[in-house]
Image 1 (cartoon, rainbow, N blue to C red):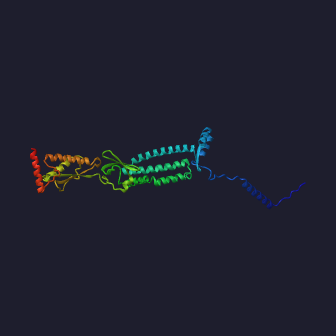
Image 2 (cartoon, rainbow, N blue to C red):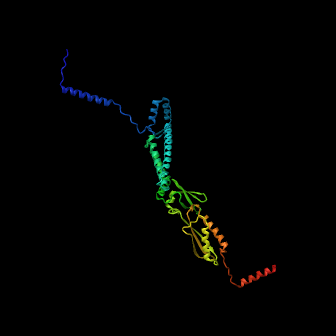
Length: 363
């Protein structure tokens, strides 16, 4: 018969504590360490692509197998792994984001055009800023939807930064210049400015639109000039309609010294009054500019309010009417004349005698 002695309470508690600690140490030692990917393992561009394959495979085996096959076709560039599934996901997300951003941009433009408190310049500026904000937000949303690991694209981000710094600095400069021009309101759609072509010929054109890179100016001969926004910021620009659309045109006229200057003044004012497009106020003016070598020089000055319709044609109409009125009142428009005086000499007299003799012999 075996007799078991009762142990004291404190010994029992110590034994239990030792057993619990031993079990904890054993469980800690037997727990398998969590596997972490090493730096040598390839990094996927889209982190959730494999999760997508697993989720679709649980719901539909056929679709899961198809996505698995797409994921198996991949290329590795260093530690970066790009699969065919990643490419398709990127295309679908980009198409979706671009479509939504494009529709949102059109909707914002239509809403901005309905704001009656904004003028045309403020509406254009609001459209550009809203467009930039929408596309920037769409880019961030697209990155978030794709779950792209930006650290894996650090190399491409650096290359893109260098491209902006060297190749696209003019583009960003023109973008900022266009926004500043709209904020300053010094150049806006509808303004009439002077445009100089490569040959140095200056013509007047109207601004049709201000784009991200350049403004579009259409001249009277329907030639469209694209001028970078940055050029308008650093170069001198003649804006005919900056503060007012009224433009003064000058037409110089010369008459002979035997003419009645008061009659000439009345005829010049009448020619201006008979021509369309010329404003009655401010009143046209005739100035006597000086006494030239062969004419009395006048200048007719008048105002128009539509410089985009042309300056040369209105000046031509005035000249035609002046010619008709001068012809009716016998006012002569002189042409340059010169008197030639020859000093007499023995050689000249001898030459004249020889020429006279030869002419008489021929007769």
